[in-house]
Image (cartoon, rainbow, N blue to C red; front, side, top):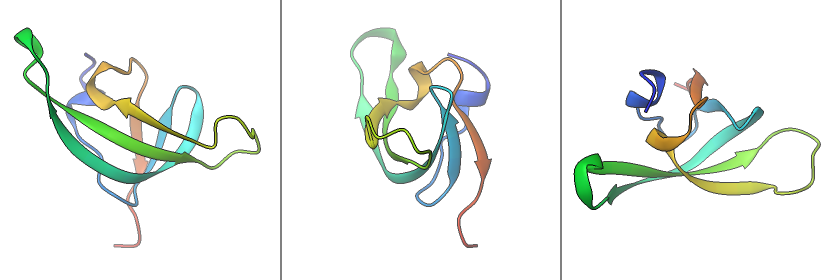
Length: 74
């Protein structure tokens, strides 16, 4: 887990994940077994022109390069 992934994104925020720009559509807690404890399933919609996949669900804390770029409309 990277220190950047320790901050959990919120719905509407712009993020970079898997070398792609995306918008966060949903965030749900996920209780992992073992030492990892609580993780977060983050649903994202990609903003680039790549057609596949258009969206993804990821375990935020496990993604090595995940980072929050900007907040939503607030």
